[in-house]
View 1 (tube, rainbow, N blue to C red):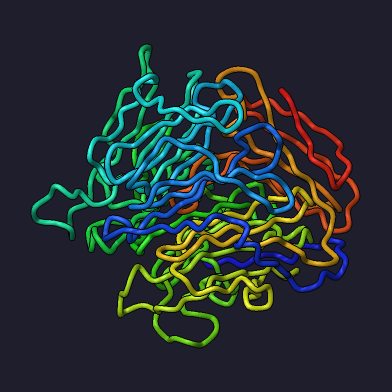
View 2 (tube, one colour):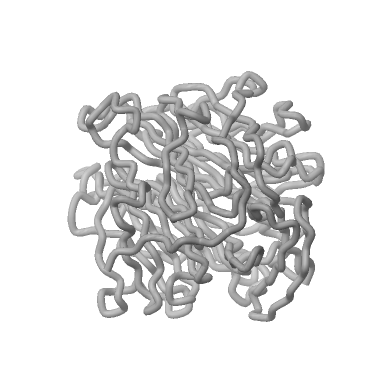
Length: 492
């Protein structure tokens, strides 16, 4: 069965087309560069590293040093200080040691690094101090994390091609690893088979169970591989007997969001060619969206090239705060791959009231054609509108300010709780406004080689207040009535 979205009866004001201002000249020049080990990767990690609520960000550099950009407000940034790191492919923020400062797990072509965050955006290499296996010479390209009963997170690292395999690179995918806390550090457990993942996400699946999703690049497993789902509690891969149908794509990134208000996330997988949106079904399985929903984005939308697009980072977010989540997809040729579009504009797909998506990247001014990789939708100026950051391969960073007129109301929701899982990773937040409920999960992972540790953003349309229900990681619930257009911190 194929699915499309139902008509969501939101009472929203008419909103102008999305509009963005280019503020890229506010950033020190930075690009993701390197040879074939950096054809993939190039992620950004967005988080608050100094406690001023303004989102700062880490940018992978490949053969360039990684960079830290500290937000001074009003789209001004200064260069932060990091331990010098080369060969970085991406990074994910999470509070590993529960001290209230965001840490970074940095992925590399070579030993990975766990950076301990401290006041004033200070970072130190704590890989050995925390007893975290660094993966040796593996080529790491994906990451996710979750909490079980421990005070510290379980982490999973996805490794790409085994560079030591003399018969590679094709049919030479490396194994992956789960890093589990033990008394004096972490122990690495092999997760195999590995099919060259470029994104991983631990989240509740269509069954409502915590599951590790791996999106794998067919370019190097070639055949005999597929997209994978690993049940976290049972510690096993799902099979067709579980209703998990084998799907083989050139998997690049994962985006996850409840689009049809059933409390279960739909999943977007980017690829070379079709970008696959799947809807969670009532029986715990997934079904592909109808082609005419407008999300497949398989060739450049500007008609400049009939060859397939190459999608990387994808992220849902309500650009105009009308209560409907939109979708950004970063596009760009691997390098000079002749089978795929060379100049491939990024997509900004705006969701309509009937559930279809309409391309607006050109109208919004974000349809650049550099080789984009990582990206982020985040409110960099705290005005309640999601802005856009894009990291490019062999081209400068881009940052855009959302100046869309007539946007709706919004809420920004951060969770705090006691214990090792301070930011309530694994919680679900449901916001009900104008009789429509939408749910977001608090996760670490997904995207392409980079993610966020920021408050959840909800657009509310013309609703001036909303009911916020949190299902905490331990299963308890709390409900809050919140006024619109403000940040909300909910403690447990």
